[in-house]
Image (cartoon, rainbow, N blue to C red; front, side):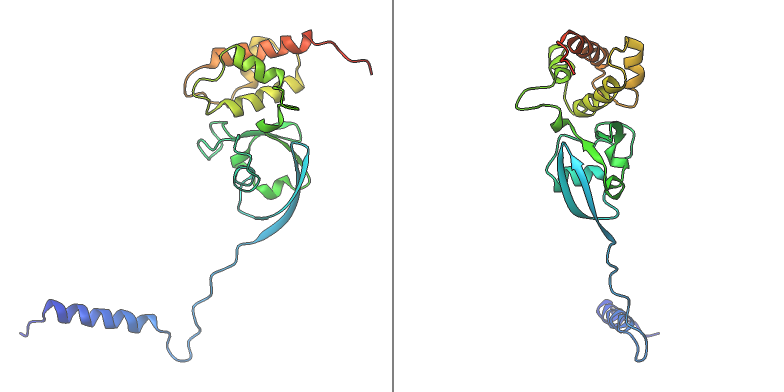
Length: 198
């Protein structure tokens, strides 16, 4: 029985691998890498119109963060469970990590960056600060946007309605009572503001 050295074995198998990777004469070449489908979309974000060509697989939060530079929306779980990426689409709070960007074509998106106007914080943001809503702050932008959607629907919620409206936004610091207080305070601030005549 002849013995094969380790060197001879590897030289032989290496040549075999090279030979097997070369297409035989008359055989079709391996297919080229597929191009990723892309779509041109138009969306209005915080009052500004954007036209952008996106890959069909991109999520809305990826476009907001990576292509529009709006990094206030956070990627927490990236599977629609924590709420850190919450934004408003046509006034409704949605998880932007679970929304494809192509679905936002022709729609209006509001992110946490759109709350402050002319350098002045929104009363909701002021209430969050005053009531010590943010702890580590990672989930705060999502909490703010869910609270904004709630107050848009119901300007004068009670504590139970606030809890129901904020369901789906996880705070790993466990600061839920402060968030409820913040939203109630913001509702009170809105009520105290003088109303302009139409």
